[in-house]
Length: 287
Image 1 (cartoon, one colour):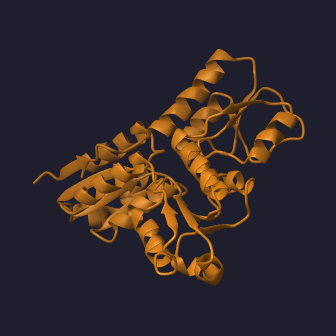
Image 2: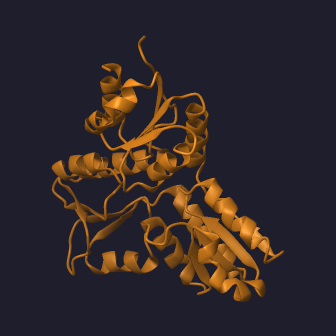
Image 3: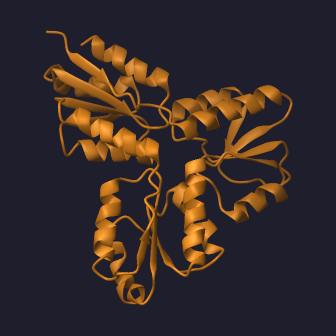
């Protein structure tokens, strides 16, 4: 019998990523003689970064003391200090912070201005979270970044005497937010929770869970560095056998699992290009 292969509707570029990639390409096309660079990787996908590099759009690991041309702030956002550093280096700044990420930054600022002890639910080392924290830090220093209640418990006594405000990294899992707010509810009655997980992430996760419940195997396509892609795999592996791959080349590592699976569903992270997803589907159809 031929295998049943389903592709999720919400797979591949989200609005913010699509906007970022298309905009930098347009910037280069309209400014062929100017240097166009991005501070950090524009998105967490090596194929896209290689494509941009081939067009002459470079990714900067660090800012040079002196630069020229246009420096793009990626969708994860940056701190106000970094914006100033880019300008002071001699670049023209082009801000491509995702609108959903901007909303989290603004909500975090609003909560801390309102006197809240701010909890940012997210990974402390993720560039989006670093930028959210830095923007909020302009207005207060009572900020905790956490993905588990255990990371908050050392501050429990201090938190009891404050109003608490909660925001979330846009690509986090709802279960992570719920675990933290359930714990916070045991220590305070004065809390404002802003579920700032973006709509694209929520829909992608919900659809993938539905597919997993009727599939023998889930395949998640996207960078291992991508938070939203890794979270998809993490959610699905609790439901059905799940593999997380970056390209179709890795499918050969899982041939036994693929061969014994009849119903296979494929989803992908928000920074995974359509051609990468299609290559996976085509290879699966050959099994």
